[in-house]
Length: 96
Image: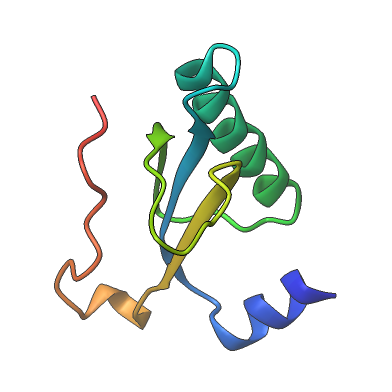
């Protein structure tokens, strides 16, 4: 199971940071983007993927030249150090 493998490789998770995205033509795009991030955060929690610092935010996707879909959630997971010996290398961006 992927979550078990992750816990073996990284027993300490410092930061879980999610960005939910929605395309501007989707209904209630800002709320939808935030809900997508909330739902993924809840799913990660079911697999015990939780950071000592965790947060999420929603954004309206701005199309780029690569033609990517804006209907997604970007997940960032940063491992932590034993005994918290490292400085805060992975701060969570301010969402509010």
